[in-house]
Image (cartoon, rainbow, N blue to C red; front, side, top):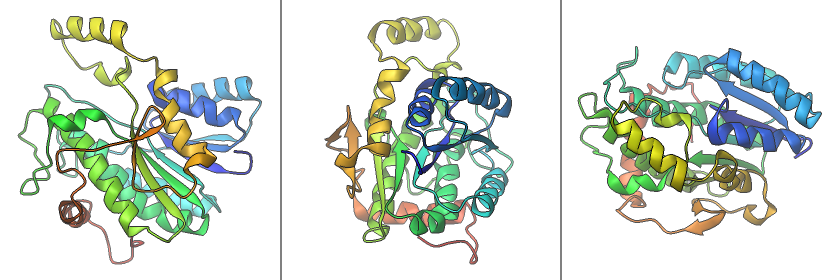
Length: 286
């Protein structure tokens, strides 16, 4: 990956951290896009020592805030002359607490879908100029427990725990429609299931449920390093050069169900998402 530029969102813990570690060791210019810049800068120093790669930078990004997404993208477009890989790794899981962002969006959907959706639009011209380039979206097989309700795509009154599953369904719909729109552009888009893991995303589960969750995570789950392998595969492997619009698990293409791959629903959801994130006429088009 020497000579390539990679952005990873939300990489201070879990599979994002292990992905960043691997990418740094491969010699790429690594841009860590994180909400907690203190934690990111601490990890940056750790990665520099481990990899002897000094080409690692930290940039502030809070995907739950559309203004932060725009500020981050503006800085990247101003400072970077290429972008080879964009990895949408950041995610949150509000379990019981209903949160609404300053944009009026439900927190889980804002962080896991709408922020990445807007960011992709704002960086797409840089990705096109850098072709062949890749977009990698960390989804989850938990999408099977949910559906995106096209009549209510900002469900602020729905149980937050369920909306994590909805956001993963949205990740897959977004990736497949993105791949259709980017066909022939030299930019590929794929999504993945990393496996069940014990990561910080489950930290909001309160006791006594947390006791069961922790037991399952500690005894049945992949380590973050194991969970990061499919992300790394899609970001770096020559085997997937030119492959787009696919869903992967354990570094292999996997099948989808539950209507998530329906092109008509994907197109409709895309158009509705454009309105939610308030795309401007001057914004790049996909």
